[in-house]
Every structure is written in structure tokens, then in C-alpha cells.
Image (tube, rainbow, N blue to C red):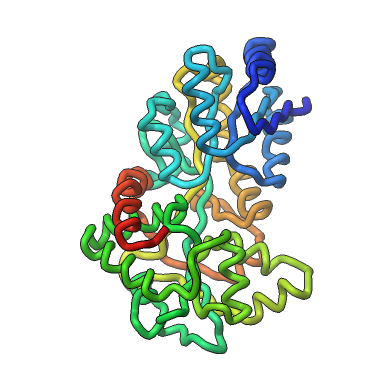
Amino acid sequence: MVSSFFRLPSLTAVALATAATLAHADDKVVNIYSARHYQTDEALYTNFTKATGIKVNRIEGKEDELLERIKNEGARSPADILITVDASRLEIADKAGVFAPLQSKVLDQRIPANLRTPNWIAFSTRARIVVYNKANIKAEWVQTYGDLAHPRLKNQVCVRSGSHPYNLSLGGAFIAHQGEAQAEAWARGLVQNFARAPKGGDTDQIKAVAAGECGVAISNSYYLARLMRSDKPEDKKVVDALGVVWPNQATWGTHINVSGAGIVKTAPNKANAVKFLEYLSSNQAQAYFAEGNNEWPAVPSVKMTNPALQKLGTFKADKLNVGELAKNAATAQKLFDRAGWR
């Protein structure tokens, strides 16, 4: 079956009525609200339907819009599952009372304990790495996240907004491991080292480092992996200019953030929703996150063949529970604001 796919920038009465009809037209469906905008995910939905006969109806949108939509729809919402990226966004949805308790022996067995909470799971991970310009920066200068606040990197750091969930989760990890005072001191030092005001996404930071606009940047690993797998000469030139560091290997490990999902408490197709999340933990789906979107599988035993990830090599990942990361995000935002990281 072909998935129904809506990309709705606003909440319209017609769209809501259409989605509600989809929810109850056939008991062999699952209705997904997704903030993952990766074309490569199409194969996941198609393969799930082939394996189970359950049709996937999907609505894509921005995280805040989807959450607000579910709240506005209330008990009549057709949504079975909310998918989004980063622990902080999942926690916001959980605090809003959107998710039902997640009960699945399969997920308990497949997903490591640090990548799940009572109400939502992570199904793939990305590392928050440091990239540096090999011509201007020495690798030993940037071995930890804390090193990025050292005065020798004055005017050398590029990074996206401090309000972005990727950085809020990193701040949450810093708080958990080193406390609020040290986290704020780090943020203040980082701001002092900015080469420019935060702007753009992680790929923009990587390209700025390669161009010499700054010497070092923080980025999610899969953005670099995309460039590594590109056939474009300009992308190869960017990659050739860069060195990569897995931060904090001697201490708490490199921070990871996640893509994850929970089942909506008013889901009309709860059993199908559980089956879909269990499918995401399968070897087939987990390998696809690595091969299709350059993410690491949440299930540690899954083998992958992504050449870029293999070239980046293995690393010690932070094992902090994703729920704790999420709970510290609001505090991270406050101290980032005080430090001037906006």
C-alpha cells in the first residue's frame, strides 16, 4: 500500500477532517505525525507496510506545529505516533501529556536502557563532534567540549544558535556531568571565542571551518558523513580541509543526541503503533538509519555498511540517560541566555 503523506504548514479544517477520516477508515493503519524530514525514511514506511500489511498515513511538519496540533485535536486526534529529533523536544511533548506509557517487551530488550524513558524511545543516534581546520588548529587543542572555551581559540569558534535543541541537549549533558556553574562558565567562554554570531545549520558551520572563516565548530556527525559520501568536488574539498575529534574520550564520552518517538495517549490504533515502533528497532530498520541517513543504530548489535561512519571509526559515547538530558534542557537554555549564546 502507498502511504498517505501530507506536508501541512498550517492547521486547516479540511486537513484535520481528512486526517480524522484516515484514522478510522481502516483498522490496518497507523497514523504518524513526523518532524523527521528525510527523504530516505520513505523506504522505512514502505518496508513496514510490506512486512505487516499496515498502511502508514503520515503528516510532516515542524516540531512545535505538530505538538500544538495534537493538543488542539485533543481526544479526537488521529495521531498514533509522534516522531521528532532530539531528547529535549521529546521531553517537551512528554511534559505536555502527549505520550502514553510505552509497554513493549521487544523494545525493552532491543533498545538500551539509556536510550529510552517510560513514555518514549530513541531509535537512532548522532554524535556531537568537533571539526577543526587542519591548517590552523591542532587536534590536541580541542579534545573536550570544555577546550572550546579556552582563550587560545579566541575568534575561532563557529556554532549554531544556543536555542537549538542539539545544543540544549549538549548543555544538558554538561550540566549533568559538571554542574550548572561549570556549564555556565563554559558557555561564557565559548561565546567569547565566537568567530561570528551563531547562524545557520551544522553544515554551514562545517563549511565555514573548511573555508577558514573559523577554526573549529560543533556539529552533528551525520552532517559531516553526508559530505564525506558526496561525489561533488566542492564537498570533497571541504572534507579534505577538516580534522575530526570525538570529544571527552578520557572522561564522560562524546555527547549523542537522538531521533525518537512516543505513542500518543489518545491513539486510535495503539496496537499498530506499538508494532511500528518495534519495527523501528528491527535489524532491517536499524541498519537503514545508518545506511540511509548516516545515523548510528540504537540497537548496538546491528551491523552497518556505511563507508563514512566506518571511516570515522569507533568512539566512547556518553551513556547518560536521554531522559536526564531532556530534563536539563530548560536549565541549559537559561544559562546559555545569560552567557549571551543566542
